[in-house]
Length: 323
Image 1 (cartoon, rainbow, N blue to C red):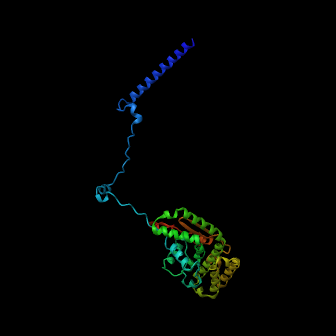
Image 2 (cartoon, rainbow, N blue to C red):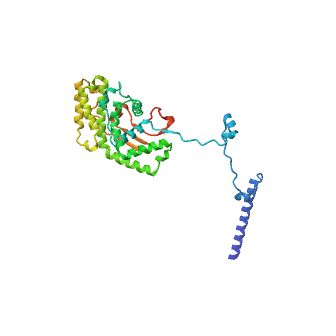
Image 3 (cartoon, rainbow, N blue to C red):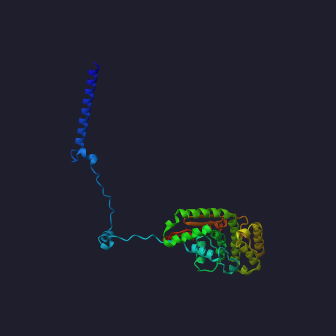
């Protein structure tokens, strides 16, 4: 009895399976009867390559394509890079002074322009003209370079700058993307963090020298005034001192001396924008293709950050670019 039921069930399964196979075969036949494709060959046929769409060429490119000389156009060379003259100027000046970086403000007050730079673009132009030798020492530029020069006294920052120059001269920015370069940047960041308190003080001296230059710009007859020269020479001496000589510098006394001087020569602090409470926290940044410096007084005076970076040559000089 049990065997008979099993045979009946098995026969039913075989019948249903046969009907399903026949139905599937009919579907395949109807699907491919007009294509000329054998369904049994579908899994073994190579895919038919689809040609990529070709861009429409204008008449000039069509006529050039038939010329043997244009059959294999030469590979394009990378865009030349530029950094402006300031990068070279800082590297050379750093090397020429054997690790020192003195500024010359007081002796050049007679060379002062009629007005300080009003914005970042004018200030960058001042630095670049000085760096390219078009002008003599500009007291405004010299004052601003006092703290920036301290960055270049750090061996790792100077190495970043030198590698940037090499990449610029070879046109190969990949030189700035190596693991070795990352290690140099890490050292530079660490050194900048340690040096920041000292650079903050240098920046304050630079601010006072900048203000003294603005005082003389209001009255050119003050350039040789003993009162101006006395305080200018003292602040300049401090600005040129190494880090270990800066610990005992009293910046509050220096600010008070600035206020007394302006009272003596009859110029109000507001006339030259002097703020005795100006912050001193500088911002320094080093990257694979960047050396940047800013201070609160720089933002106030010309509204920006001094940036040394490599750019394609054709964009150099456009608004918003760095030195």
